Image (tube, rainbow, N blue to C red; front, side, top):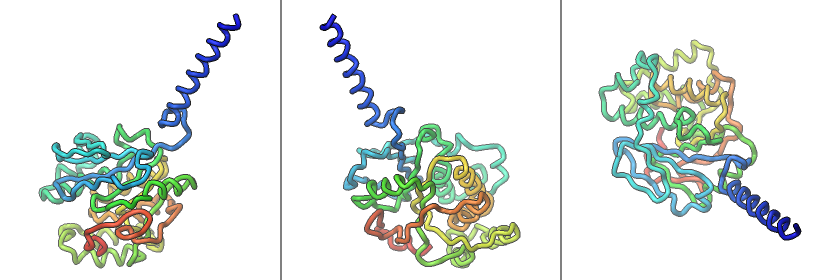
Length: 278
């Protein structure tokens, strides 16, 4: 009987070790949040940036949504499934920037990529993640990106944004954007007037939407649903509609990073300096 007990005990220990191993690898038993880094590249607008120099990158899962069927990556899970069209709704067809109504290929590519920025919580392969980190295709990541993001998430912040380095309200962002060629077909003044008419105070600040860290919770997802509709209805200049969408749900970022998203020592940088102009 003693031998049987010892063998039984050893089997229990082995099962326990296997279970603990699964927890450490991110199994369902673990309380550690599951984190997905998401980017999207449509129409070959950007080259996929490999985070090969990022420490502890295996702690996060990396997803790139793209129409490039030849794209390969040792780190990113490349996804060609067109969720932006599969998850469309009949009610969206009334909006000028919905896919069925877009004629310009550049706008089509822009709105295709933007879906994955805003609607991560609706994509079936991402629904079970606790946090989403949107990373624009123009960004390169610093070696301590994962470790620094993890520190913020460990503080239980639910929405983290970069402060805009030059402007503090969407009116100023509108005034700059109306003179930019890529927004010439977008009626941004009408958009801003609609927000003012709705009671939006425009005193919540302005944020760089090139990188966003958000928790997968209903209140934030609801605000992002509003944000998506604003992009379809009015303009794809999403920094104008972002703060308004948060205001509609009574949300403010829990933590604001007071660094330039395109050039900071802790998270990211870019070799496309013109990106800092809007």
